[in-house]
Length: 123
Image 1 (spheres, rainbow, N blue to C red):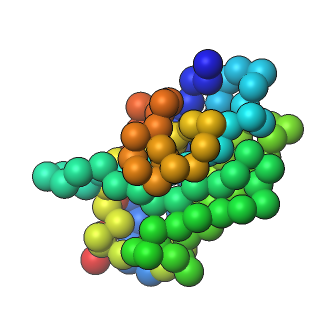
Image 2: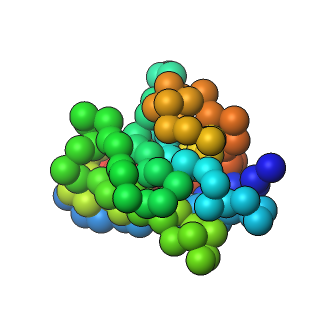
């Protein structure tokens, strides 16, 4: 099993940047694909991005492609989401996610996810 704790959320102006972190516990971290989901008020949880267990392959939702970058440090059991050129529509609770493959993460149905961190983008 793996437990996930997000950090780094907050208030940022449109056009600014923010970096989210997700610390994972468990010795099997490097076996899991990791990702990020988000949920805005009144909307369903949606896929943001994912990274393979090795960190070589990354996947993004069209809405964030070119602006967000996901990465991982297996030595630190941590995955990151670098958010650049943020927009008001990026406002949401961001959840870290883990699963053995990317598909469940991209379907917003991962085996594991954290408590979430709030990101608010002001216009």
